[in-house]
Length: 192
Length: 196
Image (cartoon, rainbow over all chains, first blue to last red; front, side, top):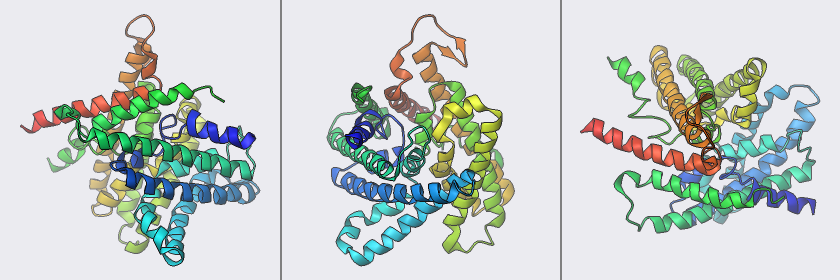
């Protein structure tokens, strides 16, 4: 039950894109087509879960015992960057099909602030998560990212065919659509 | 003249937020008021200028294969400094910016300038570029924060503009997206006017 509440909270109430403003770059950058947005969501889910698992262990078993929590930012970004490289190499070898699907999205993920943001949030003292809860928290946020980016891509495919005023074409129209989506997601506030 | 152009390009023509659409996460996340936007913009400017200086100095020592990880370490160090200094001297601002301070590390703007400008130019030009781009970013965040503060709370930098309640939605998440959308459109029009 506890895990279901964490997931619902992460997907709907504190949606990572629309409520917490993390991962806006891929959200606007790779949402022109539904198919690419699905690939991006898959890559984010994979890396976010793995990265949270690894950084959670590093934080609690290396940084805290040695009293060097201020190295959190540096160590986390290095873990995320090297993890992405490692995943890329392993996928290429083990599962070429999956690499084909996710390959081009993996390098983009290093600068995806959603990954770093969630790994930092997962070790916050006020949540007090254990390892499993932290990983579920990451999966929930990745699902939230997938839901919003796929919805958004669906809308943008239709937006292409609309007669938008000249100055609003492209990014401005997409941002206003994202704002309306955020308005819809506000309906979930205080759900849990 | 060349340097002046280098400095001013960040404000309208190549504004990082309105034109290049870089660093949107902090631009949307912290701009609930003009003051927060300005604080975030100046923190980012500090990191940008410092990392540009270091990158332009060490650019010849770093093998090109490991340059991206090296830049990340340089940037992350300055972000950690900013983080600790703000926590010590500006606790209220630190509290309201929260998670977005450590996330300056993954602000594409900082990495982008290190890779695209500082790694190819000398230190002085890199400082000017960092200042221009950073202040352009701060300008964009202050304008967006000011717009949201005026519409949402009826005040700017804490001074009352009109009495009564504002439109709450502009302080909340949807207002950030919609406000930025219209500002980008406005910048497009201004840019076109300037060119013609």
